[in-house]
Length: 147
Image (cartoon, rainbow, N blue to C red; front, side, top):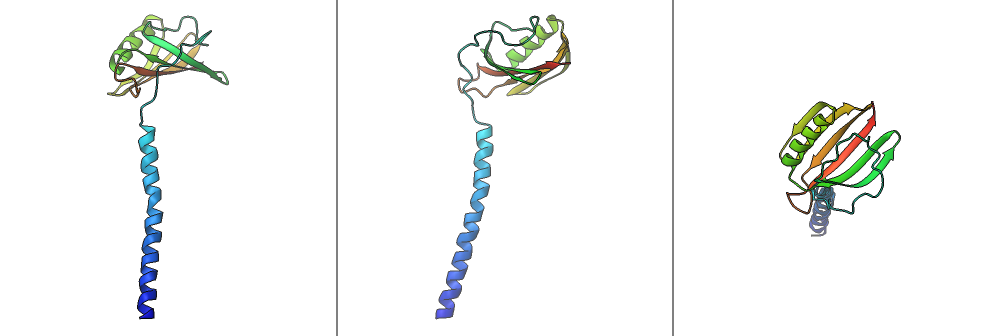
């Protein structure tokens, strides 16, 4: 009986240990879900200069909220009061009208990228439809660096 009880406890312990190890997979699943979670996009408008070139297009629907400098690269965040497709199409048109060369652009259902060069700079405008405010608000992330 003692051998059976000991063997049973060993199997039970091994099962609990294996279940505990499996918990890390759940954590990975949780973190990947949070990566695709919504983001609050609307914030107070940026006060002061954005650091972008004077000729860089800033359409009326775009509110810049934050600017940072990473070496020679200027990173500007904001939000656009329209969906991703409308924001993409209008920003693409304004980038061209401002005299910038469009190197690449891609539009998907919930995100978009416009890569550009001009005014001695290169960069990318990334548009994401992951705002908590709804589908009529698009997160904007602009990276602008020396060419």
